[in-house]
Length: 289
Length: 322
Image 1: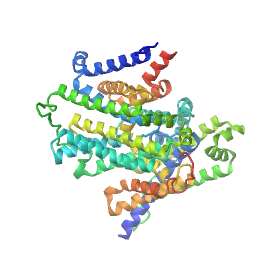
Image 2: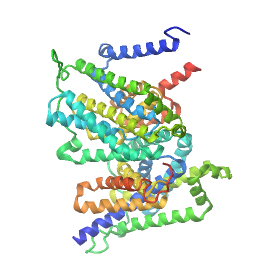
Image 3: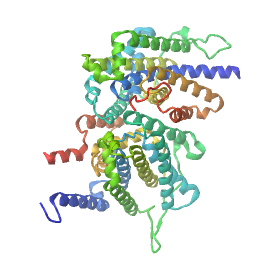
Image 4: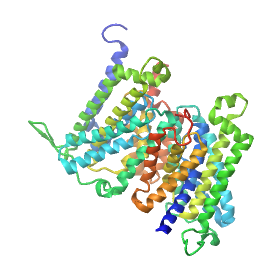
């Protein structure tokens, strides 16, 4: 029982780390540009499939680094050509636009790479489990959590201490003033979008190594990321991290006792949080609400 | 122009007459165009759902992106009522409308203080709850296979019985009557002081608040009414197919409703119906031509947002004014 519990908690943490990566990207874009990026799951899938294509040439490590960057470049192009046109308009339009993009990406991926699942080969030493006792903790799982932790830490450091990071955070609070101070908001938003998409691409590669790739895999990860943001509080990146881990562990624990509710529990969590604290756990009053 | 009929009023009456004439005669003109009556029925029901959503979206300016939940709840409740409780079509529809509307009203009370993007996000997420329930709760909902085993029942009118099950044309007219009643109620509410207040909130929420209008209460009532209408449309949809599917509750269905409203014209009463006509016919056609139909539907979303944000009717109105 202890082992089972431990298994599900680790599982929950790993899933949570995933949600965090996805949700942070979404949250960055939402905070600065007021756009809910429905196509975020699509970019995750693109990242995964790019890694699959690059793997024979670059190996796992090369693909792990190259694929997210390429995804970010694609994201940047999409932002420049399409999404930047709806900034400042009713949020309805950005919703519909990214909604359509999600359809286009999903079908495009299916067209290019086929509807069948594809594996992403991981290095042999990562696929072994650490010990017979804790058979479920493979090196790869540890590696995923380590990568997610590193990237999240790095992101927070960048946002805290670099000039661009400070501008992004300031823009979240008051974009007009930031623009008034002479910051190129257009470029800032594009860069911010690209960073968000980079995170999506990275999650795609990591997810591909664990679960394999499918054109529809982004869909299932999108909703939990939404909920991570709502639970953590819109406008707060730290809240998003907390929310992601919380729902990951909650669904992991529920899987022990009542497996069929493991997906429903995150919605219950969201409802409870909204009832008790409508702005989310770490959300500031008045942010985007 | 003076007199009992100004030009504006005359035009409005002509348009209204034309719309109803087209709808009334649909079973006559559709078959020669190679369309089947059942498609007309489907368009009418989806159009009603889009109009119900637009009641909130276009006239109150509240961005709900989870209306598929109420649509689907209405469909499931109607189906279950017909399957387990009573073989009566009106009772089933009533059950569907009540279940979807009450659920929407309860959730609405939780959400009325949220606005814009955040409102959209929370409605999407909560909408998905019902999708998961329908998907997971095999013994009650039939899970992924959907809810089967019920049929729409003949309508007893005292003197006569109308067989809406086997006669597609009779069913079309039955749906048209339901549609007309709901549209009339919606139109009546929008013309009432309450409806005017909805529009005032859309145009300038802060000013409405300063005037002493209880904004939250109005938004909640508009949201709840919209949920009732949508759930009623959902109940009709269950009758159309004699089947309810978990995908009716999925957020992509909500997206379809929103695009119908936007495509036809959000600021107009009839726009969503026109949007539904275009969307359903296009989807029907594209999915019969290519397996990659999703790509083209996605493209439609993008094109509408970039080039047709006011929708077809909005575009026409703009041209007329110019």
